[in-house]
Length: 243
Ligand code: 9D3
Picture 1 (cartoon, rainbow, N blue to C red):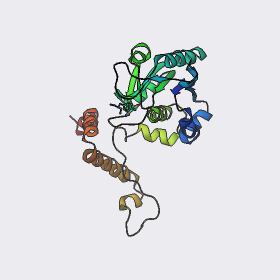
Picture 2: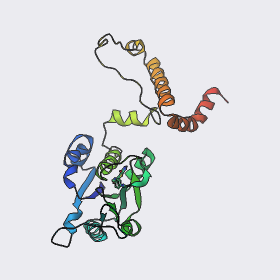
Picture 3: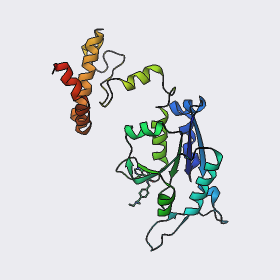
Picture 4: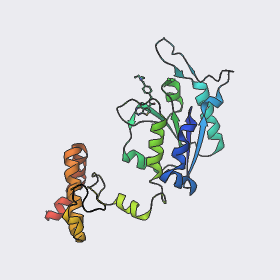
C-alpha cells in the first residue's frame, strides 16, 4: 500500500509546484505516495473564517485555535485508515535528520500540521500531536517549507522513487560522509583542470580517491559527522588492520 500523507495548512497552494515537479511529482504520479491537502480555514465556524485568536494573558501575535485544527484532523482521519502519525512542524521540535526520515518512511500514514507564523494552542500539542519536528535553529515564517522538507526526504526513500543507480549510490560508501568533488566536460574550463585520477580510467583508484576526498571534506567541514562515521566504522577499520 502507498504511504498516505495529509498536509494540513492555511496555504495549500504553496505545495502546488512542489507536488508536481521532480522526484516527488514522479512518486505521486507513480502512486507510491498519496498526498492530500486540507485547509483548516475550511473548518472555521464563523462568517469571518477565523482560525486564530489573541493569546490568553496578552502579548503579541495570534494563536491557532483548537477547534479548526481538531475538526480538520478528525475530518481527514474519517477519510482513511489508519489514524497515522500526527506531526507538528515547529521550531521546538526534534531536529530532522536522516534517521528520523528513515523511521517516517516506514509508516503507513503521516499527518503534517503546518502553522504560519502564529503559534498553536498548546492543547493541540497535548491532545493531538504524536511528534514535533523542526528543521533546525533558524526562523521560518511558517511550517509549510518544513513540511515540504519532510515530504521530500521521506518520499525519496520509498521503493521505486529513485532510479536504481541513485538508490545504490545512496546506500553505498557515501553513507554518513559528505559528497566527493565531481567534474564533467570540458577537461579544462577557464584554466581550471580536472584531477588526473578521474581521467585515467583506473576504476579502483578512482573509488579510493573519492572515498579519501569524502573523508577529508567531512573532517574539515563537519567534525560532528566525522565523529559519528569513525565510531560507526571503527570495527571495519580494525578488521582491515587485522586486529
Ligand atoms: C517570532 C515568533 N517566534 C517567537 C519565538 C516563534 C515562532 C513561531 C512560529 C517562530 C517561527 C514560527 C514559524 N516556524 C515554523 O513554524 C517552523 C520552523 C522554524 O521556524 N524553524 C525551523 N523549523 C521549523 S518547523 C516549523
